Length: 96
Picture 1 (spheres, rainbow, N blue to C red):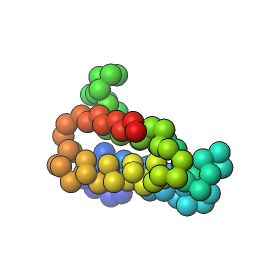
Picture 2: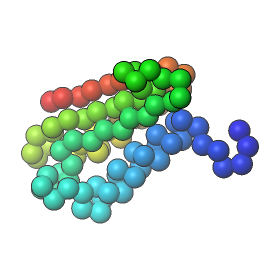
Picture 3: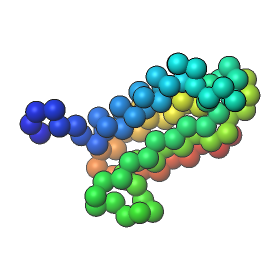
Picture 4: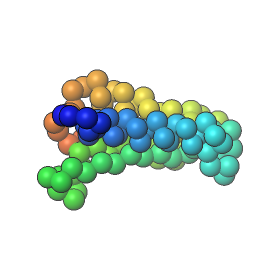
């Protein structure tokens, strides 16, 4: 890859970082101190089927007083990235 071209993983990481920045800036005020009760990141490559994205990580409906959903999403993303998931489609959902 030449120049500033980004890989699929680079773009996904940027999206997760953007979610973190939003959460750190105050997030969703309806979620209280947690700043996020749900968080997700989904990416499709041109060759992916509509029902199977390249990456689909979802944290849905964390309970009040528990970890921020963005924090849990970051952990899930790091696990995914560490599993050499660069070539396969992945869907992971966490629903407490």
